[in-house]
Length: 68
Ligand SMILES: [Zn+2]
Image 1 (cartoon, rainbow, N blue to C red):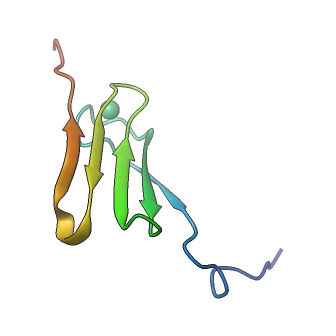
Image 2: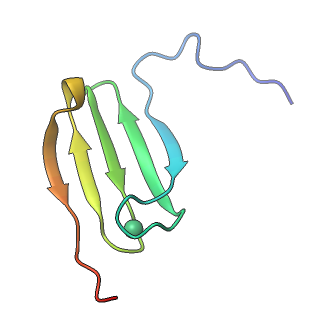
């Protein structure tokens, strides 16, 4: 199963599964959006959201509190 990949792709969105920095679950996703030069991290479990721009500058962030 070898498919041609990435080399010819321009401004393609990449998704990476990561550990949520807020609730610690492994269901968070990080979207790389080169078209907008941002990285968007979101978690469906706790509604965590972070949008980062150039040089790691935080554009938008939302981290819901936990009751634990
Ligand atoms: Zn989370």
